[in-house]
Image (tube, rainbow, N blue to C red; front, side, top):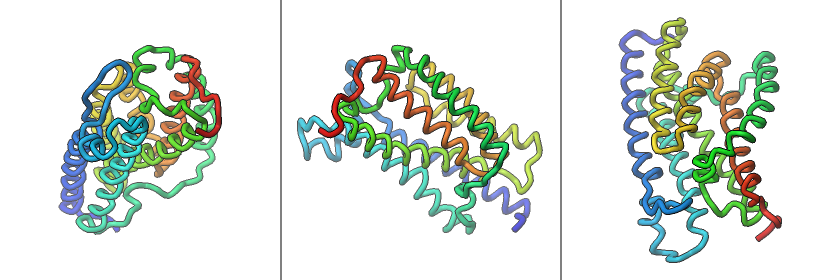
Length: 256
């Protein structure tokens, strides 16, 4: 159903305000660290909630990131879903979760995915990136741990893409955005997602600024978040893998 100018304006205000508010809340609950010594750091809210229950537990570094992924699902997917239904009175298609099979997009992905894998092999030699990733420094203890962690990591990227490239972009977009509007949408999304990476290695911030418009345009062009999600998720799996490979820390056993 086509929205009136007033309805579109109201939706844009709700979406933009909620994105900014939820991103700020997310920073305090899932990105606020202390004890940044060496290659380790502690999520403050996680350790305040659970650290005292399991003092000295060697797996806390792993569990804190499962917590972070869960917070991402809650704030970047569950809460926006509630807003979409309760306040915007729309269906969940605003996230663009439906996979739209498009031959051109599949061909582009078939070309891009190998390029992504090859490029991560070389970018992971950056010492600042290697100090940041993998987020949990315990995923090398076994292949089972690595696989479970990367599977949980998917929910982070799913929620991230649904929030920024789905809810934000399509929530601000009109029914048939023109070129000028698309440029504005990509600029807003890229600025917010780049700022979201502040505190990360410089190379990652630059990558967020460079890939933001590309992945955002792919979502707008093909009306789905899944192609960009595939690129983003695959890239980070291989970042983790190749950093462990370069540091000769790949798991030596399957189970614990």
